[in-house]
Length: 387
Ligand SMILES: [Zn+2]
Ligand SMILES: [Zn+2]
Image 1 (spheres, protein in one colour):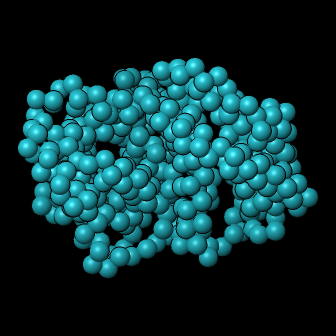
Image 2 (cartoon, protein in one colour):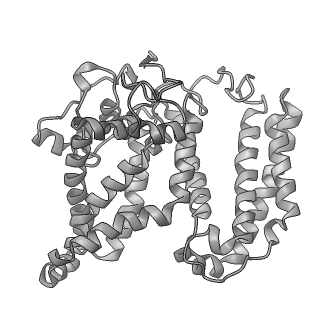
Image 3 (cartoon, helix red, strand yellow):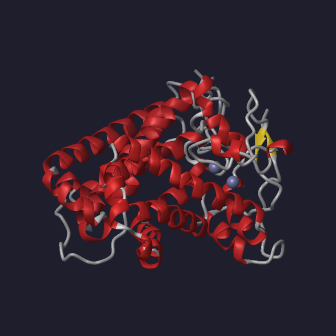
């Protein structure tokens, strides 16, 4: 396990076991999720995904029970943190959030108007994604971390803002992903081809989805690296100097939509079955998080077959010989075929780029649209070498 002597970036106190740090962070996460869920209940028709509502309705008693557990656990852990830790900020925040949630009706809060409004924000999607990914990856990174790096590392809150906004805007990004192919490529759909594809075993369909999306993704990604005005959008993704489970969320919305819309075209034309499609959406969410994660796993010969954290970490590396390498997201063989494969046995010495990308979601949103230098007031360190 990693040494825990590090100081918290939130209150400057030690983060070792028994210091009230773990209970404090967990308290804030659980209480915040519980409060978020209560707000989802109250604004049911505007803050939850329309497609998920009937499933939520079916399991509502269990969901309410879970929210109750979240709030009680958040409160108890908050009290524990207050008693253990000199700084009370985490514990007090957690208890305050539980109090607000209770005042709003707690786990029994009434479901808001169900008027079927056409637009929604995916607050439920944000909370579920946050709980599931952090529950998987934070312990993995603590136990198998490649680099001793705090959870709340440099740029954490910027990346959390990306995570929050992109999950909240799930309806918009999904529409922008699907619509271009549906409007522009309907002519390319052939019944005979789609019937043939749909009858293939689901595993084969799944692999075909991975391959077709990755071929398009490879070239879109490579184009983002070589076309100067497109690079400014992609530079935002490369501006992180720390790799972990959250780093992959730093994607400019223009890049995210453009890449997704283009990679969806072959999928739309080939017309896969819904089950392998849904499995792929779950897989890409996990895999995109995993290849950025701060984990030191090695894979032996598997590393030639599927993109690993080491493979994608080299894509973010500061080493000169790693620049413009490893564009694939799933299959490293694409980089072998197109001459951009780079995977030495060791790990990169640091991550980042020389472009002066500003800090924060908002500044990074405007960064590609503004003339360079003049617009930049606060700059990221050019490149940080950690080891
Ligand atoms: Zn890149
Ligand atoms: Zn990346």
